[in-house]
Image (cartoon, rainbow, N blue to C red; front, side):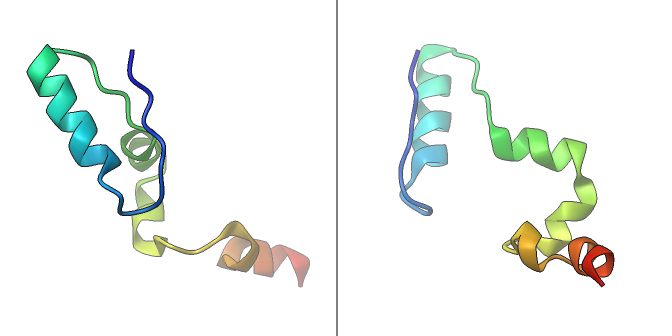
Length: 60
């Protein structure tokens, strides 16, 4: 099992794809899972929940 952590843009996903291909391993990706669960969230990429439109509407 490999667990990759690091800063944004550090190449974790690229390395994970390479390891999975090399070893025939299963690669789990939180980003891919979240895109499947919340496809509309892709348009709002980079926004934090605190500043999101849904929260703003609730807090009035």
